[in-house]
Each structure stands twice: as C-alpha cells, then as structure tokens.
Length: 52
Image (cartoon, rainbow, N blue to C red; front, side):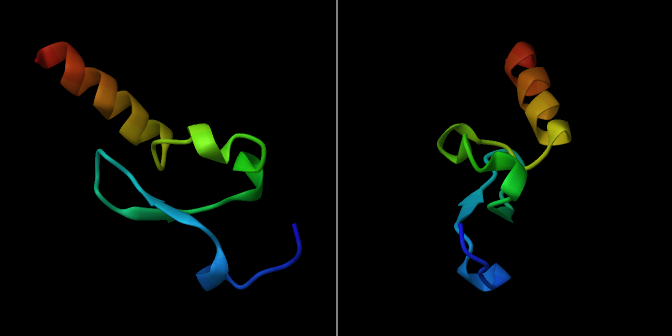
C-alpha cells in the first residue's frame, strides 16, 4: 500500500462505542474481519452479550 494521508484511509464504525476508527498497518491482511476499534470494546461486547 502506498503512503496516504490519514483522511484517505478507510474507516469503520465500532458497534460498541459508535466511534470511527481508521485502517492500520497491523490490520492490513484482515481488515475485512476487523469489527471493534480496541480490545476493550471487544471484551465489552462479550460482557454485554452474556448479560442479555
């Protein structure tokens, strides 16, 4: 991937905190499967499901 400005990177909305998060080099291979912006939101999602 060539260098891009941050504003040109793809973004998604986290379903837990409803904040946008941008593509990171770390997620290059599995961007399609990234759902949460952080580990904290991932664990909060699991806690929320277990309560319901």
